Amino acid sequence: MNDKGTPERMGWMQRLGKHWGVGPGRVVLILLVFACTGTTVMFLKRPVVSLFTEHGEQPLLFSILYYILILPVYNLILLIYGALFGQFKFFWAFEQRFFRRMLGRKKK
Image 1 (cartoon, rainbow, N blue to C red):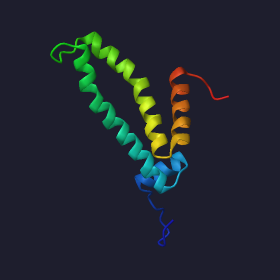
Image 2: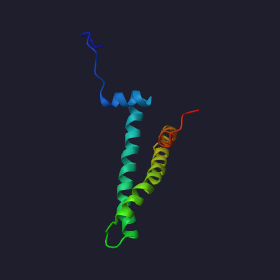
Image 3: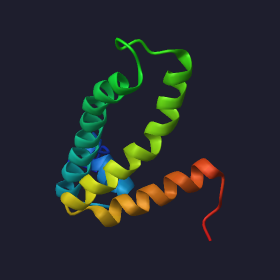
């Protein structure tokens, strides 16, 4: 509540920090890790596509395989950047939750 007795709205950074259980400084680092990972994957796509296709043409099967195989690559790069930015523990737990949900397993 603010000084007028009305509830204060949290900003999106505060909501993320509360959801993740981290402070504002760590929220920035975590968002930076996600941004670096996404940018790296984006920059890697063109050279990978050119290695396996002619003239950059992407057959449907290649596109399907690419999106299936990019998931583990993305997650590995996420862990690498997480370690570089000192957030490995957060991202290791994040990955474990992600794969548990994806595989439909309950936490022990």
